[in-house]
Image (cartoon, rainbow, N blue to C red; front, side):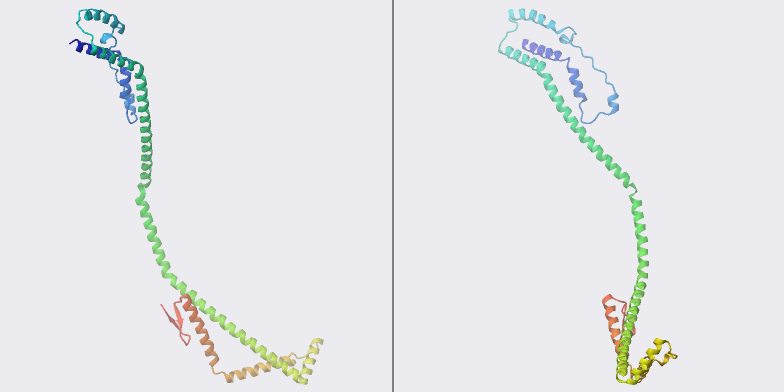
Length: 304
């Protein structure tokens, strides 16, 4: 019975002696949370619990426990009401250890736990801040994309308009291509005709020059007439420009050449030129993918 009473007294002494710091520790435990406090919760005032301190909760100083304990211990030990044995000694040592650890090491343990709690709270707040920032960015993104339907509708409208314009351009483009191809063929024909004409002129002038030179070299009368005409032209005494024997020789040559060509023209040269021209035009049309080609007579036939 005395053992039970002593254990109960020891527990009450320890609890009452720690009542000074208990409200503080309790408040610290209550304020610990994983998320930031709301403003309304921070503003709410919780009434502090009324806790009586002192000896056994009576409000008296704890120093009164010393004389009371001495006066109670003397008769208890003298009359053997309570026997101090090894259990009592062990209980006393344990109580002394608990009191010493609480008074000297309680703050250290509290600060260590509180620091760890603050660290955990800080890390948790940082993580939650990042989550809040990410959610804010996502909200902004969703707000920006709230008109995405209108955007796609506008894109589809522009796409339809573009396709209609491309179809219209596609319908007109073959005509432009055909026009360009015809112009290219006509330019080629014009260049070939000009080239053939220049070649003929050059060959004819060379032949005429050679023949007139030969005539004036071999006939003395023509030489004397050409010399007299040249002297008269220099002196300015020439009365008739048509009397120039050199010019007359060239005119006579061209007249004779024209008459001979008219008599000997059987159309074979023109046919050869046309065949060569058709061959060149077909080669050009085939290499560049023209819409038409030419037959042997020079007629046009469509290939598309």
